Length: 205
Image 1: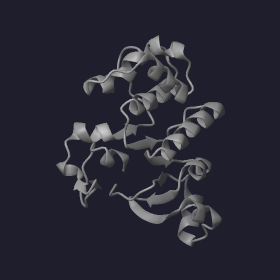
Image 2: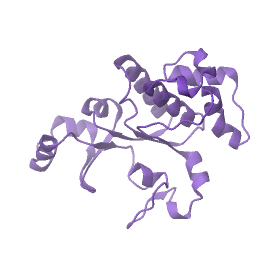
Image 3: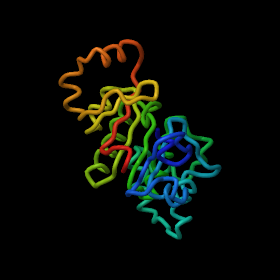
């Protein structure tokens, strides 16, 4: 679903629209400036953390001040000295955080997140979640895939459950956690660890 929303894959049927315009009519590069994607397994460009953070803005003719770069690192719970570290020196969790900061540097309107804290410790997870909640209050739309019901409850306002490619539940998160007693949902959670997709809007965003 996230890859479809970022135009990395195309739907085999149906239509996904952004700003009332089908994604098929969007230029991929222009779309990805507005819809950022952070995958569970981060891919960083060769070079330093600084070079990764500056990459997107430079494509748009923008530059980021040292203070802005440091603020980006603070938002992902990394110290300023990480700016000049080579990405090959980072742990998996640090790479994941830098991937998030690189996406935020592009100032997207929508942020697609695939298990954004799966490789992080508890403290780092709390810091990242705080950052995401702050961004949401400023108008950033989050579309999050998570296996953690606790995280879904903390971050999401709307919850979608997908099973075998089908939407089996669409509700507000608060209502879901008050009462999720349908036989289908119970069986789903009993059978396997859930993959939950959370969003503030539908597939037309």
